[in-house]
Length: 107
Picture (cartoon, rainbow, N blue to C red):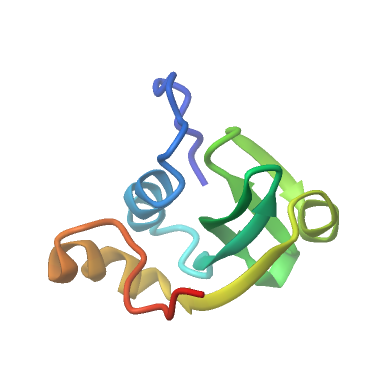
């Protein structure tokens, strides 16, 4: 996945950045977008992360870092709500007119 280094203020962009990046990755159609909830020091927050399940890698767009999924889940325990395919990520922003979440049940 291409990094997005030109963006300086990434706070609050965890839905937008992956939704814009994943469709531009035709060489990696196995990337999926996971929408979920993560417990942070401010309580639970919505979060989205692209991952490639076949190689256990996660790209954290907020930090512009690649992680091993196990290490990422230990550091940022995400409760997944829904996984979206490469094709869905290409179409959902147009269908819903926003970058997410797309139909997940909020807790």
